[in-house]
Length: 263
Ligand code: IPD
Ligand code: CA
Ligand code: CA
Image (cartoon, helix red, strand yellow):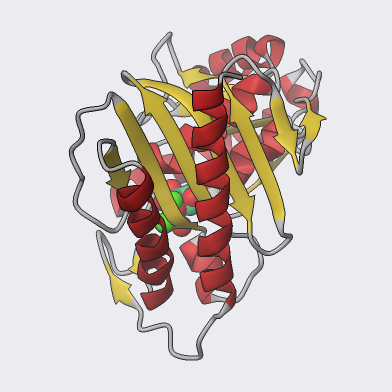
């Protein structure tokens, strides 16, 4: 890891933890508002956590671009772009379920370079820099070696868009008989870290935004997983899959055959 890369990860870690401290102060009134659909919520705490991160980036890295879920894009001229999800798992947070995280990814010249995902409920930090492996609280992690879809525990998520959800529901009904089981845990960033740590064998979802997956994709890749769209596409808003390389190929085929190539 170069000193420059180490500095980026240290900053991401510091800001993710500071945002986590904010999120732990969960007030009784979350001042919930809706965004793209009535169930796509934003709370006063998404914004409070975001403020801490954006202020920290503005001070430490004024020349960088920042793409953060609850704010307009900030342009930069350094070639570095930050992808920030100040609270990934807002619906879990709303219901006081512990599965939520702060996700901060860094891309250089358009290529994901580093990521930190802070699991606030468990106070556990996942981190990775391209070429350097992935860690959980500083200890190296690896994805699973399961190569058979029929034996694979597969995490997924559903989009807030009603039409896309309906397609996802149909496709999952066709997929379910051919995998070990499905998990819908409510935080795409933590799902990707679960792939990285071998706690699920794969994750796929359609309709994600770059702040959902950038940090987690670096972490999963550095733990040995392949992360990409189906049919050779890069990760993105279309169906994106993360799994060890052998399982990736087999599952990709199954996802295409069962109609999960969406978004
Ligand atoms: C959502 C979560 C969820 C995924 C959705 C995301 P949010 O992010 O990651 O697991 O299924 O697609 O939008 O709204 O909690 O930041
Ligand atoms: Ca998110
Ligand atoms: Ca969010």
